[in-house]
Length: 163
Image (cartoon, rainbow, N blue to C red):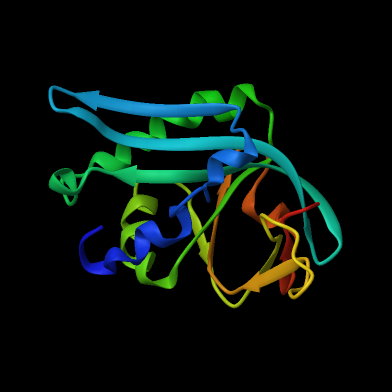
């Protein structure tokens, strides 16, 4: 959306979608014009430099373009009680570096930490003989302490999403 350009839709073109991960929860906010914002959540184990860690991975985040800049992203904090109920130590997500300012604004209303310089390894959505089975990206990593403090987040240079 907006200043980050049309690239936002690229990962979800064709049949590609984070939805293939079968989110446990989809939060959808509506207004009189329809869907205003949405987010998906999935509990999973990740590895941070070999340390297993249960997280609630946040993804499928979006805000309708005409509502950008109005603070609607702060309503995502309404998920906090749900995250507590899921009994996860952390919520975790990744975004492109172009969204740094947006994520940092979001973090002003709660204890969100933005980490950079961490590689994230994921399995490719389709097996291919001409490519390795995983890809490594260098996104911004977002961590929200839920059941533990940020000081309990393992330090490391690589996160393996496949746990």
